[in-house]
Image (tube, rainbow, N blue to C red):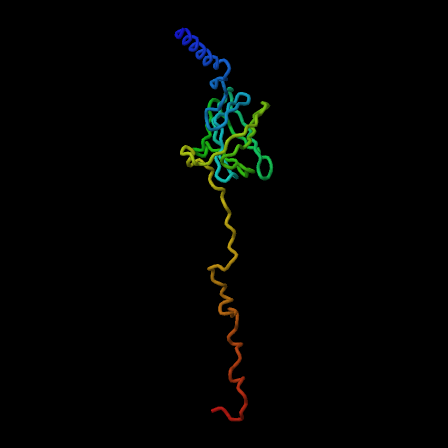
Amino acid sequence: MRAATSIVLATLILGGTTGCNFISPQTTNEFYHPAEGYNFEFGDVLARNVTLLSEEGERASLIATFVNRSDESQNVIVQYDASGGRITQEIAIAEGITIYDGSDESRTIVLEDIDDARPGSLFPLYMQYGDVEGIEARVPVFDDTFEHYEGLLPSPAPSIDPEPSGPTDEEPPADTLDGRSESTDVSETPDVSDTQPDTGTPAP
C-alpha cells in the first residue's frame, strides 16, 4: 500500500511540473534586441544597434551599423526634432555593410541642435530612402560612461569669441600724446615778457 501511494504521488508531482511547460510561455520564443541599441529595417536596408551618444542632450553622435541588401548604394534620410524645428540629414549607405561608429571623420554622424536627447532617454529618429516607406524608432541615448563609448562623444561646437570692447595695449596716435596736437606751432606760443606787468622800470 505504501509503495503504491508513493508511486501515485510521484506520478502526480511529475505530471504537474511537466504540465507547466504547456502553460508557461517560452522566453526563447520572445523577440528582443541582443544589443544596447535598437534594430529595425526599411526596404533593403537593415539598421543594427542604433544608438545616440550625447553629453548634454543638444548634440549627439549617431552610432549604427547598416546592411544594404540591394545592389546599389542608397542615400538614407535621417529626420529628428530640433530646437528650431525638424531637421533632415542625408547619409550614404554603400552596398553591403556600412559602419558609423565615430572612430574617424568618415565614420561620424553628428546630429546638431537637438531638442532634448539626455543620456538615459529614448530619442525618436525617422529613417527613409527613395520611395520606400520609412520607419520611426525610439533609440536609446548613452554618454561615455561605458568604456567602449569613450572618445566617441561629439566634439564641442566651436565658439566665437566676441571682439574686445575694453582698453587695448595699442599706443594712442601721435597727435594725442600728452594732450597736445602734433601740428601745434611752437612759434605761436605767447612771449612771457609780453605778459609781465608794466612797472615803469626799464629793463636792464
